[in-house]
Length: 106
Image: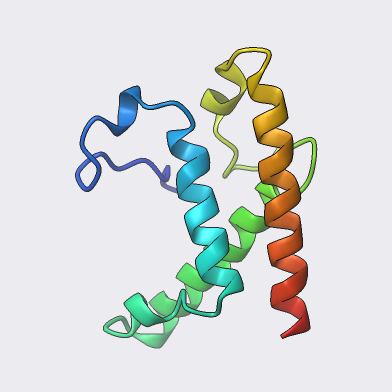
């Protein structure tokens, strides 16, 4: 699987803190809000299904604490933060978990 980094759309994203987690949160919120399919309308059904499946996989990896480090979607750059970053990651895992549960209820 290809990494989920792309600085073409977000300039100076590589130097920002929590850049990857911000992307994961955006995907999780779109998936939970049932709007992740909207920007994928121009794709064929197979590609769209793979994209939605990958979004759900991201929610599975980052929607638990501790993160699912053995997954291919887990990025080691998340572990390279400071001690205070641990709380941020735990909060993000909790929010993504709740979003995933809400998505299953709808």
